[in-house]
Each structure stands twice: as C-alpha cells, then as structure tokens.
Image 1 (cartoon, rainbow, N blue to C red):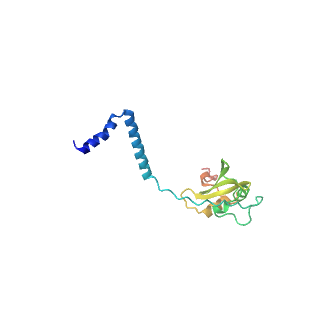
Image 2: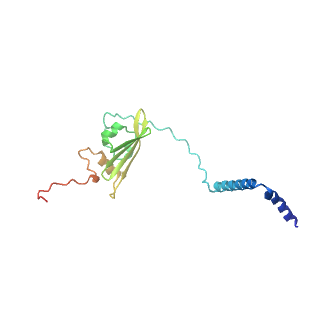
Image 3: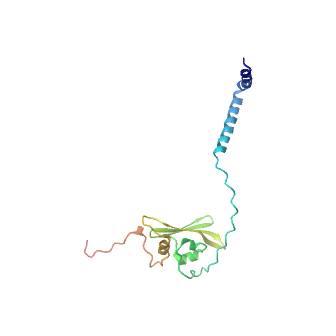
Length: 174
C-alpha cells in the first residue's frame, strides 16, 4: 500500500471507531463553524459610530394665554416647540388625540389633508417635537393649503368631504 494511503487510513481510523455521539458532536461543531463563517461573510459592513448628538434645545417659552402674534403657521415646522394651549388657539381641538407613554399624538383632519403632531414632555409641559402635514385623496394639496384649511376659524372651516354635501330641500315636491 502506498504511504499516502496508509496515512489517510490512520487518520480516518479514529473517526470510524468513535462512538456515534462523538461523530454527531463533531458534525455539529463542523456545521456551527461553517455557519458562523457564512454569517460573517454575509454580515453587513460595520457602520462607523456616529458622533454624539448635541443636547436638545430647550423649547422656547411661549405665552400660552394668547396665540403668538403674527400670522398663523403656514408650515408644519413652525409648530415645533408649541404647547397644547397654543395649538388649540391656532388650530382648535384635534380630531384625534391619544397618549403613548409620556407623549401625545394629535391628528388634525382637514379637507384633503391631515396634520400629525407628536408632543413630548419638555420644559414643564408638552411641546411639539414632530409635525407633518400630509395630503390624502386624489387631489394634490400643498402644506400651506393644508394648514390654512386646518387653522381657519371654525366658522370658516370647510366641511370635510367625508361628511358629504348637505341636501337642500326641494320646493318642487320631488
């Protein structure tokens, strides 16, 4: 027999004589090692650490007894930092309001659009930390038009299309 074949048989002899549990254990080890290698090869590249975020700015103090002077907001970003009373004076009561942990989610629904606000505790009260206006339906709607419709005084606020037009009485008896 060739020397190489003898060496191969000598190496395989202990594996063939090993107990079935030892062979299973060896097979499991081999599978685990090969899986770890596969996972390491397909893992995404490590993301470099981001620099620490700066401390959040304190919300500017707004006199909540009166709506801030000047025109009503025309961009959702102008609502950032506003408190609940200021929002009520500018926009009225929200269509939907719910609590999530320490935060509150407010939804204002207008004609063809909605305004989402997330208020978080800051400076002794809730303050708007996220504001986004979004259109719904098929009509294009700008953020300015959306906020203008939502911020209109209640007497001037259009009836949402979901309510449908009101039927006028028919004098002809039809």
